[in-house]
Image (cartoon, rainbow, N blue to C red; front, side):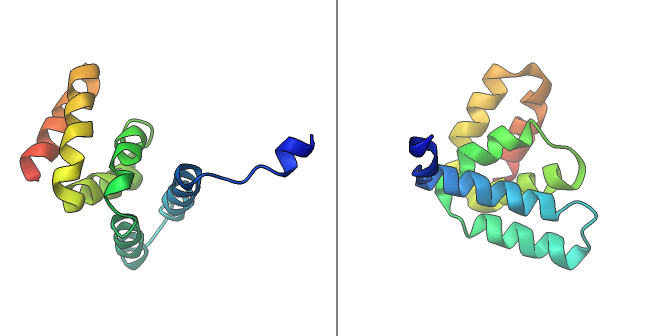
Length: 103
C-alpha cells in the first residue's frame, strides 16, 4: 500500500493524464475551446505523437478530429506512428494514409 501512495508519475504518465484531461474538455465544447485544446496538445511537443495515434483509435467525433489535426500540425514526427497504424489496422489504414498525405 505504501508503494502505491509513494508512486510518482513518470513524464509519460503525466502526458497521458494531461492528454486525457484535454480530450474530456472536448465533450460538448465550443469552437474556441476546441481550438484551445488543439493548441495545447500541439504544444505538448513531438513526444506526444505515439499517444495521439493510440487515442485516435479509441475516440470518435470531435475528439478524433482534434487529434487528427494535432497530428498534422505536429508534422514529420507523426509519420512513423501513423505508418505503423496503417500496417497494423485495416480499419484505420485509410485514416492513417490520409493524415500522412496531409503532412
